[in-house]
Length: 368
Image 1 (tube, rainbow, N blue to C red):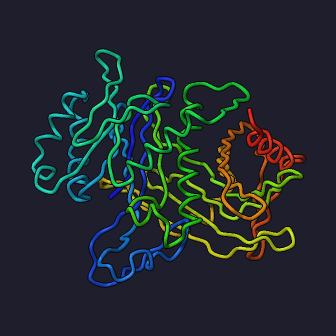
Image 2: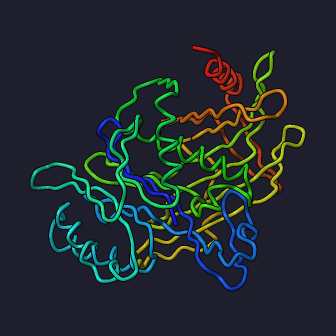
C-alpha cells in the first residue's frame, strides 16, 4: 500500500510519494524505519509485515516524473521499460497512458501510476494517470492520488485552505510548491513518530518517509539535501515554550540512491543525547551501476540549506493543540548548525532564532 499524489501549486507540477513497502509474511520481519526504529511490532503476528523502503517517486528523464503504487515487481518492470522508451523517442502523455494500460505485468499484477510529461513538441506539461483517483482539493484544485494513504493526503491538502500562510523573502512557484509538500511530509512524519508502532498511517500501510519531485528550470528533479526537524512546544497563559528538536531526519541523494539519516534525541542539560540513529540506502526502481555502501553516511551531515520545522503544540495539560510548520531555505549560513561529538549531537542556533520561532508560534496561535 502507499500514498502518492501529483498536483500543481501555482502552476508548478509536483509529485509526492511515501516509501513504505508492506506485504504478507509468515514470520515477523526485521525492519527499521527512520522515525520509530525497529518496526517489527507494527503488525505483530497478524500475517502482515513491513518489508522495507522503496522509492515510489521516479524520474524517468528530465521531461517525465511519476509515482507508483501496487505491485512492486510490475512497477519496476514497467518503469525500466519506460526509461528505455524515453531514450529512443520523446515521451507524450498519450503514449505513456497507452503503454501503462496495455502492459501485461500491470494487467496481471496490478499497479497504479500518476505523473507528468513535458512534451517538447508543444512545450506543454501534461498529466497522465493509470488506475488512480482524481480529487478536487479546496487548496490545490485537481489532484491525482492513489493508495491506502489517499484519505490522509485529501485531509492534509484541505487543511491548507484554512491555514494562515506567511511568506518572507522572494517566493516563486517552486518555493511555494516545496513549502507545501515539505509541510505535508513533516506533518505525516510527526504523526508517525508520535504514534510509534501504533501510528495510524503505518497500520494503513503507508509512511516511512516521503519524496518530492518538482519541475524546475526546464526539468523534473527530486528535492534533496534537506532536513526535517520535529519539535514540541507548549502553549500556556504566559506564552509559548519551545523544547529542543527531538527528531531530526536528513535526506540526500548519491546519484539516484536516496540516503536517509535520522536520529531521535533527548535533551540532557541543553545537550542533545542520541537515543537511536537510523541510516537507510534506498535504491532506485531501475538497474543502476552506482554503488553506495554504509560508509557514505560518515560524509552525510545533518546540516542542510533546506529546513522543514514541524512543531507539535500542546496545551498546559500536554494535550494536542495544533501543528505549526515552517520551511526555511538558506542561501548562505543556515540558522541551525549540527555538530557531532562523542555520541552527542550539538545543536547551535543563530542568536534569537528560538525566540523568533516561539514568537511566530504565538502569532499563529492568536485569533485572527
